[in-house]
Length: 554
Image (cartoon, rainbow, N blue to C red; front, side):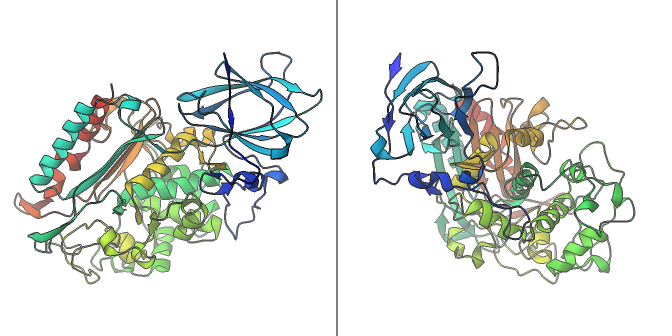
């Protein structure tokens, strides 16, 4: 079968690629910069750096096997795809994509750097590319494939049952009617956003738990406190990039990056111990409270001092190794490692080198300081961090928490920027970030290598429920998060405020469920216990929502 491929470039046209460049400029695109203060140097494509997910110069004669040379695979989705060519002296190319022969005879008047629309011949998942012929003899050509991106789609396009999705809507709306505050759900499959729905309210209750007379409806672009999803889409992404660029080796001792990290067995702790949550630290230290159980020396409302405490003072509770014991301290230290390597505060590094280049304008730390209004952000706890008056500490600012990170340690001890919490985002922008874990880059910009992605999401040998930071669906132990139908390859994370993400490479599926379930009355339980009402709804417990999504996938 022979197919025609449309040339997207006219002599004066500018076509945006990945929100970061134009067709005429694609040779000047740089990989993700490490840091303005890093010793690593940014290099342009003309300087030899590869761009996109595939960047090859053909013909090649690496192998003596005839059907090995000039062949490669790339990731794409049906109905998507562009092929970038640097022509060199080539006047005619015969390519094959997924067995479909493409005859390309570009008009030299269009210039050397062309973009071709190959959406008519791509398929979901791995695609096969081969060069069958090039003319004249001795000519060569450079081929670049950008990374896939999110596009608009419909449930029918990707095999979802509209009836099942309607039942999912009914479930969440029924719980909103019963008092659940609100949520935004985004489902993407095969690179297409097939559902993006807002439910309930961004602000529903006052500080007493009474319903507002005029609650504020949730919007699909409402900004949420991602809580511990910060660990993945901020800290882990920075670490994965640093590993990909050779600036971080997770098998080295933490002390290699934090010189003062010594004494009491610290010298034996490796960076990967922190990622596996088996370094031996307690789950948390209440730096924000003078009456914390570690003593007055651990009370800190100054970020610099708090960083020194985690680097030199926080005691271990157990030996290193073994089963994961979830700890915020691990990720506070990982955040400090990022800052020591890059020479930048973690929020500055990520916002400058990843979020803004990706075009993410609402993914950031301390949003109220950066132009986001409270009305754009989902509210969380009702009366400060007091659990309905049951908890008191001097720094608590009171009132409905809205726009400041809810995690007390991150807010009060780390000024809103910590490795374990502090990132805010929308459902759409979080989904764009989740796509990075499927592909390793965006547009023409590599962020981390496929090998590093696999290294980080692979279940640990000592605890199959975790990879390097990521939670994994392997074994079904975390069905409460992933649901019972997720593949063994699925991974993701959750956040205390009510956020859950799921990435399932087997199905090409990304699910972002952002709720403000902690924006709900706090009710007594037992003699001295209490609970947030939002925690007891199916929407706030995640697993049933995930189950229903997979059930809708026919």
